[in-house]
Image (cartoon, rainbow, N blue to C red):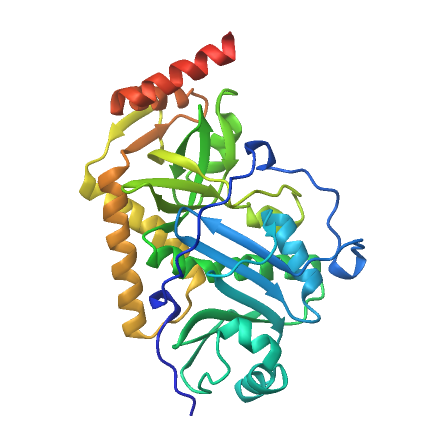
Length: 369
């Protein structure tokens, strides 16, 4: 039997060099032409190496082995990854699915030794110590001796199947985010005056509806998922994720720049009500609700961990939730379907921080000046 050991959530990402300048906010939602299946895409210059950095200390590089380059190019277009290669990052290699673990190891460590060097940093890595997470369409392999990852891709026969695989593939970065002090959250992200605000809630709570109804002074960056990462000591930045359900069903072609984050100023948990109202939450209550939002995402991304891994994951997520609740003001936002929920939300932001009051005032002047 194969021996498995350390779960990917325990493998911290490597520190990275100075952060590259973020992309302009205007690139957040880029309207692309109809994205066809990879075999129909004609690129004059194909790329198979991309970079993603979040916060100050989290970074990944993505490469595609033969037969996966076009798939990776599509993933990079959707998420607006930067092209290039850079050392010191967690390396993620995509390759076509092998029939067995032994065949995979043989290809990587023997017949594909040229790629094994940059992927694992050494040629004598043990054939034991592998851990595999099976998502059905993709399998993610990690080794206890190194933080890098291999993602095996199953054949795809439709746009929707290919998009589901891209959604799953992005989740390889979630354990590193959690280990680095951040969280993936089930929430919408809106911004104004350079500050980010989360609208969190379960399915059907009204996140997408609020994003459609919010005043035009606010910019919608994401309506279903965000990544929270620590920056500048106790502060946090929020990074947008695409609306995967819309992409999978072919109802939208919007992409987003995951790498572009905004300072996280507050979290509002949505609740349907007869009138608009904001209720401040204590740190304990906020910790529980942040933990529930992150755990919902974790249940989708980490399937059937063993009991020890499950305890590690739950403990780290809860600890991170408590730290975020201690730093970021949290509120219950009761929303009337026909009301103007953003007005009590803005008043709560005024009261929670004098600096936020100044930001909103400047934003108002710029809108009406």
